[in-house]
Image (cartoon, rainbow, N blue to C red):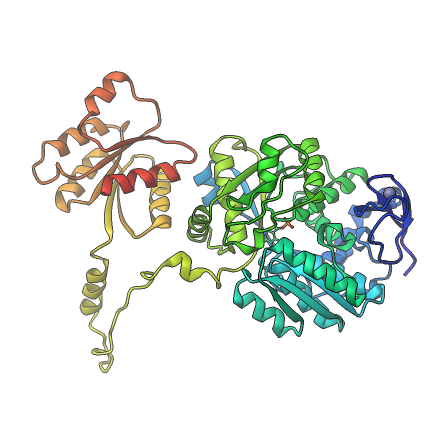
Length: 546
Ligand SMILES: *Cc1c(COP(=O)(O)O)cnc(C)c1O
Ligand SMILES: [Zn+2]
């Protein structure tokens, strides 16, 4: 393979350095952030994008824009090329018509760090590195350890004690040396750096490592291909060091420069409430983040308290192309895990759940518009936290051992046993003439807990079902043909057997003063139907049932 023309450019003094050996800083001014630049002109004229269909399906499909000179040094396990999944249910719940999930769970170690590991370890191999050091909040460690094993590179991994034991064991399984640092992630990075210098070992420096940032571009390249040259309006990610969005946007910038994409997306970042230095700075309009000394989130992946220069780069990107920043509590994140799992069949790790919880807020507040094309970066698996999310009551036990000797199980017995275990579920009757709205409410309920839902398509049916088998709660629309919501509510109010049942009213429009007067004292809550009624609805239900 011919030598590619790649240069490193100092972001401070614009000094240009050839890219052929590990270069931790600008030899002229000492700046530690260098940017890789490629010969984009030749790609533009060579119709690079047009030739892609003939390339491999891993990230190495885009090798011309990756910082490796010789493809024989590639260490790959088919990373990248992940599915872009349209999230219709979740989108409907949030009022987003074009919500897509980039399913990075489907990589060798379940996160987008596989892209980073493949590029970083390949570059190490090309540069003759035999032993390396990395600090990690968990996912980098898993990915690097796996790829280093393939490349025969010895890896020293510094992890904080917050990283779940399951992840640490996997790192060790790949043969990496695991050093558990009792302290914050920022402290683990300092210890790793000192260790590397003392032993004279190559150190992967995250955002300051060329390979790491460059690898993230491949997500942009895949998105541009999937959307056929149009860029999404938003790229949303839970951030810790900020490398993901910075790399992804650099990818779009290069595509734009060679004419392969029409624009560059805006970036939405989400951080844990207990560790949100970048969100805090962004909200204050500041290009420099004040470090969080003692992160209080339990979500280790997102516990970078001091983002340093990375935030400045992110600030530039968000200022130039548009940005949103949100926080989410650990509790909100765990709730989001449940919602995403139950609406889309996708289980995500806590760092991704934080992203979703933030996305919910961005959509609900209208800062992301209903028609915007939104891509969310989805990683991880939930094994380590499922117990926490589900609590103790996640299964129903059904003992059929008594009957198992017989050939025909008595169906009646099983059914009535199921009836028994379902008895303490809350029974909710939804009276709603718009089937889409009814299904949405039903979905929200099912996603959020153990509710038994009955649907009635109009007022008359609703009343009939309520009389027949009084529910624990009624949710009713107001504007319905024939018997409308007002009549339903009055009828229930005058029925001795039903009058204690709490009622939640859903309306598409603001109620007039006269209408409110008519309902007062008869209903528990009224809610305006909207794009994102999930949280309000659930709150309404909980307060009505209590
Ligand atoms: C690494 C990681 C993050 C944080 O990524 P940065 O872009 O470096 O801030 C978020 N979520 C998951 C799942 C990760 O693995
Ligand atoms: Zn310089």
